[in-house]
Length: 277
Image (cartoon, rainbow, N blue to C red; front, side):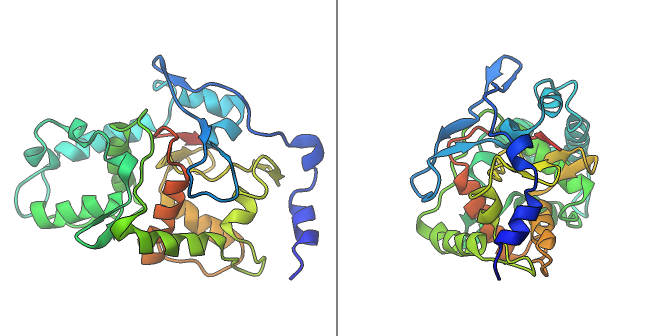
């Protein structure tokens, strides 16, 4: 299939309306965040990586630079309530074991996904494993409000730390699988992740300013949906937009893709919970 006619239509008007990533500085509570840095050595097609924050409108950017204005923070508060809530047959809460609070998890989000006991684990896996095995509680729905509130709470403890996802050793085969998915064309439109986030970042597709697809701010509060959005929810939406059958949230395919995409952001600071359009 020749993509040129479709791409021309999809990106119509970009010459006049589109602009490259801006040069604004992200600062929260006086802390300046790395939103632009040299691409990791394992990236072949781009030399500089940028946070998605750099592609947002000034109005959206403003919501993230002040925690009082950041609409995601209400979900972080809900995550704290869940952290302290007793649930399950064992009569325990997260706080029963993690007595120093969620601060114990500082740095964890920057290293996820990672291989644990030979299995690729993402943050949702860790949360549900501990709920089931330690608390005797039911697993949380992957992209449900409770789960993403917990992921945001834990992710916040790493905010300002650089992404540092391991891709060697036991992680290597999962990373290779994720890379394969990233560059595979899907759907009736025959588009891959790279067609938008490598080949056309900085351009407009309909009303959206394409970023490099970095996930260092997830879960993010998406204004369009007025809630926290998981990484896998966004993956599913992107693949669905190519008019393809998508993988399931929590699938091995999306976990591998998450590892690969997370590694593309190595060196950028964690922004969780970010705000996007």
